[in-house]
Amino acid sequence: MAVAQKSKDLTRQRVHRRIRRKLSGRTERPRLNVYRSTKNIYAQVIDDTVQKTLVSASSGEKDGPVKSGGNVAGAKAIGKLIAERAIAAGIKKVVFDRGGYIYHGRIKALADAAREAGLEF
Image (tube, rainbow, N blue to C red; front, side, top):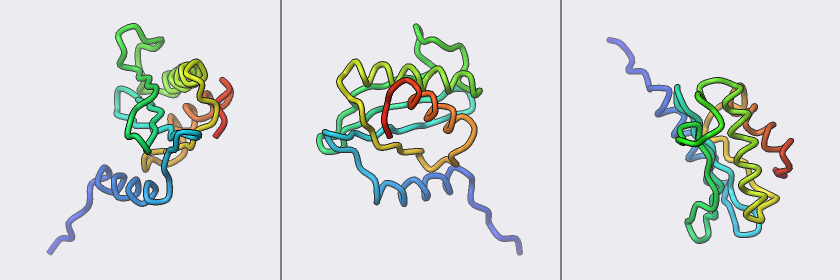
């Protein structure tokens, strides 16, 4: 009898729920949430007290700066864009929510680009 395997996405969701129990965005320090798919990468700055998205950026935007978010270069561009939009909205400090993904590759590139553009984690 074979043992049923969990899918990678179910494992990621379980890890994300565990992270979110300890992490929340407040008005003075909102949460920078990241989601990645195979073709795109999405970032949102969220205030959890009022449950509202303050700023967002994704590689799937029509007038976006990148053609593909499925690579590290696209993730860097989205990290820079989300930081610019957050600073324009008056947000300088955020809590980073990696969304259950390993802090490596595209997630790390997005975070580093956002830090370089002036966002404080």
